[in-house]
Length: 389
Image (cartoon, rainbow, N blue to C red; front, side, top):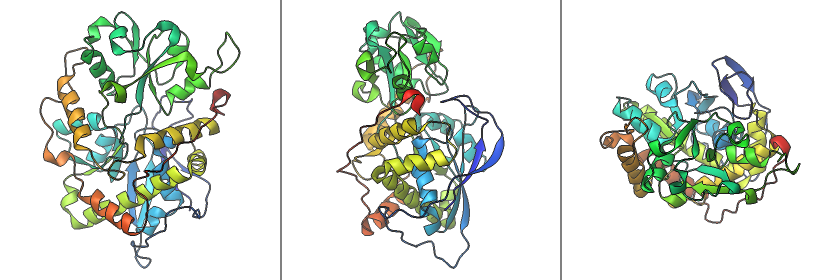
């Protein structure tokens, strides 16, 4: 199966800025792996597959390994879907692309979409793929920063673009306002941090944190180690917000055909994530073949760390925890940025989430014997190489 991919980028660095340049890219083909979940064939072989577009929130990388695996292993085609993955970038807002009808589904963080919903976007979280947040704030141990209350007076990095709210919530929980720190606009890399311009930098567990660990310390000539870093994890602080979810068009969900398609899309996507859990090395290879600019060891690290955000699943992959949803909404309503604004000003509508289609997909998968809970999940120990090669 050769995944179809629309890409909107030129050549990128490790996490460089994307620009719009639509081209077609094909990854290497493969047959279904023997360790993969069994296909249901519920899409029907006699009917033409339904074309479906999925908008990612960033470029090809193992953050989205499950979707690439679902294409590569034929899980979408098993459900009668012909899925094209559309890459994102710094100038792409997935929920906007979904709202305008240019794609059928999108991947985005919940707090970012809640703001769009309050502004009128008719979209719904139909599967909360990431159960845990992957956002951290990291610093060198020489800075002696181990908690948000120690950010006061420091150069604190933030990407902005809706990625800053867990950081702001963590600071405000510890009595530190945004005005108490020197907020540094952080690029989507770790250059400012490594140069010493940022005391505490934003870093995803699956990407920027690894960028540091695959860089040589000029003082030693060896790669930096975890022992040289302090990591503040927002899951531990209590200000984590829900991140990667599958979003659908709220109004179209009332249409029987789109509703059925949504269940099938979720089911196949979950199979892809189960494959990525059970075959992380192969999943990383699939994403590399799809055109990722990240190196092999970095990609495997990313696949492994993303798996930790999903597995083990408390109630089945894609389930939306009421507690985590409430925490995300409360932070979105109560945390202020440097201008005093919040993400949203009122509770989101009931249509902001809907687990009906997920529950149907999970039932089918459990009936087929697919492990959608991953209680026995054990992560790998990944050795990063210089530059993530």
